[in-house]
Image (cartoon, rainbow, N blue to C red; front, side, top):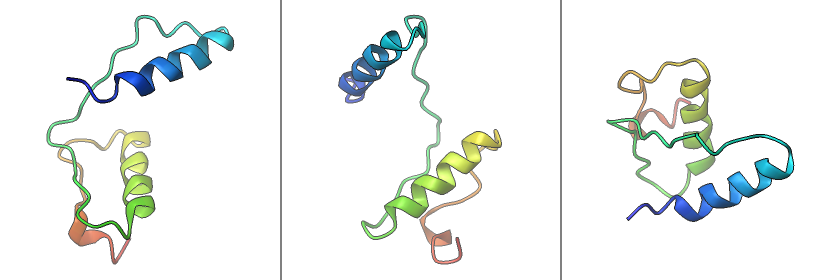
Length: 71
């Protein structure tokens, strides 16, 4: 079961109202995908993940939970 499906539906509805056709967009799940290990640094972890996506540096994702104190 895809737990992202409800969020994707909401996003597609929002984008349709903005005249953006997202009907043919697909979800992609990086493998391996870095996993956050603590509840305390979720914002930092997410920002680092987004930085990697923006730089297209997704080959193995060059960070993990152990790097969070220095990030």
